[in-house]
Image 1 (cartoon, rainbow, N blue to C red):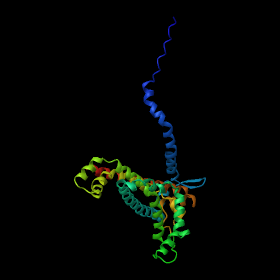
Image 2 (spheres, rainbow, N blue to C red; image 1 turned 135 degrees about the vertical axis):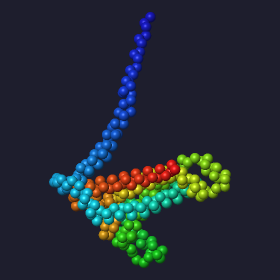
Image 3 (cartoon, rainbow, N blue to C red; image 1 turned 90 degrees about the vertical axis):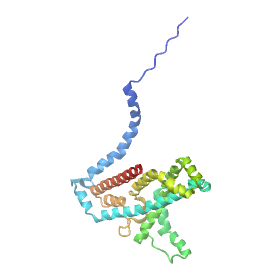
Image 4 (cartoon, one colour; image 1 turned 180 degrees about the vertical axis):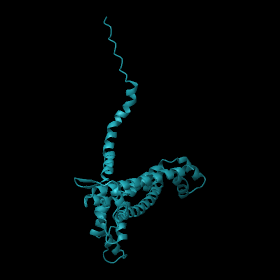
Length: 300
């Protein structure tokens, strides 16, 4: 009778290989992220130290940074970004919280949540064209307000500084409020339901529960969501490029459009890179400060 051939014992990986295996799996994605994020950043810092005119590179050291800090257009673009961003972010936060409040509580509104997310699914350039058509080119808003008896004739929405800024804010609020809304709804749904039930048994109304219990519990989520959206607002470019081109008189020129104009219209690439580096540093400092203070104060 033939004896069965014993199966060879499975090969065991060495302890070092077992520890390195997860990192080997992550290595391709990590290399890809470093190539598309770290390299452009390092190149921008390097380029900012030169006066670049196409293939002609002249060493400037910190000259570009010194010139930018004395550039009135830079400070105006920074102020426009802060003003438009602050108003837009405030409106988005308030509207998103209000919609989340009703969508979380009301079954009918909760069933239509997907409708509120639709603006975020459109391409930013398409949204900018739609609002430019509604405000100025197609005069839809003027015609509507005229029929309601609120104005007479057609308004040049992009010819006035306050109105031009308002058009950018409206377009940004319309498209990106759903981003905050979906985060706030998820935060409400993730809260401990027993706390709400205990408050209801004590006779608390739903507005009181939301204001005194749910909102404080959502504070870390709100801070992170506002920070992410705020960082995104600092890069506002598409709406400005399509709708206003920075007019009237540079009143709607944001930092992203300022950098684009310096680099791709004036071909001053080193100057544009220096502005990008300054904007990145400023954004990181503000975001870090806001998040750190919010979470630190929440622990007290």
